[in-house]
Length: 618
Image (tube, rainbow, N blue to C red; front, side, top):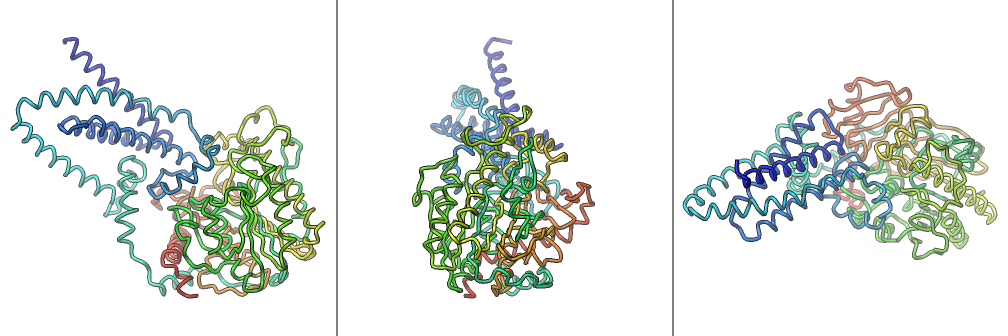
């Protein structure tokens, strides 16, 4: 074999090796399964097919076009890996609109970076360099016989058209084949083709459900009204509603290395407080903003993007609107930029009259992304003092935001040697700081005479420690003494403190952010229509139920005795069910009734938003 052929073969082997390594790394980082080797082969064939297509044409600048396409494929793979690392699913075209929100929190973005993901880019120079040489040689050879070129070109186009049609057929999966569904959920090219189809043709062809059918589904899935215990015990009080950033329930009544993690919240729970210890986040891709939306409106978020942008112009009739009709003034306070998650534009539609964001507040005390919780809480009380009572105050904390960065002199928890320099340790520090800030808030409310006539609602928006990132599962297993699964990761606290009420209890019935509005309405004797309320009064609920949107995907749920996670391909039979109290696995079929309920509630919530049904009836 001559030297030239040896060089070509060597180059081909190097290129192919780097390509296979790229794909092996990609599928490993988005959850390796028994099918992953098959997906590596399929993806390799598709990429080589793209390569061969471009080497066989005589179009000008084809090397540049191929390079752009290949680099684009690599960037999308990298985005998938980053997104999967946080959300347990690959990125969708629907999330392209959220890039500006990601850019506003670069610390969190960098903190999710996986070093192994750089292998996704290492093959680019070899593939492009080989393409340039191989492609040019191919063009020179084909110039010899124009007739031969035209004949091959026709055959090639027919071949690629047939392959493309088959490929799209597989991506759409009209027969709902489980085997194809597995591929649609995991193989890179099929997955993204199906996603593009769903967000274009799929959305255009999607039919709205008749309003009467929406109401029928709501009626079929509505919980029994039950009792109305504690009705009106907080009637007429000021409402101070605090959403705690990334605050998980395991922090409550717990200690680490001899230090109580949440002494102030623990103190509240002991007196005049209803504490919900089986309370879950039900957020979508809007994270914090979706938690707010569910809590204020008792509707589920959607998977595509944040409600505050997607359905900004809808009409709502949530908690702030009901309070406004009773003469309450309403305002919100957050220590970050006002346009983040589109709050500045969206809050008015939520019934919030005034929004005090970072640019409206004293910024002299910054921790992490924005103004410290101590400062925000203190400034919020100053705003409360100026209100004509009664008022509704909605405060969003920030210091406990990923990646949990704080100056050393503010850290109060001694970290064990085995936990040093971990996200877990940093999280404990910032969460403890937030609890201290809550203590300062309570003290200032008392000093300003605002405490006794208020109802104070505190709840977590979402998890802080993702079980699939930063070895959090290892640290948390050691801390908790059990496996760290979604039943713990998605559990956040709900604490409703009513000074002087004499009501102190722990409610263990499962509930979620979807239930906050009807629960507060009962306590404040607010009459609400059940038409578009998808949650229930968690104080009086006979049976708990929360459907999930992100992390555990559409169809997943939790009840008092069961948690079910649908597979990434959204195939019911491929999901898993277990008892969150014991960790014991349950037969998947036993989850079907609640799975169907989760799908139904998610569907009607989407229809309420898509058709703006609240607005059309007000």
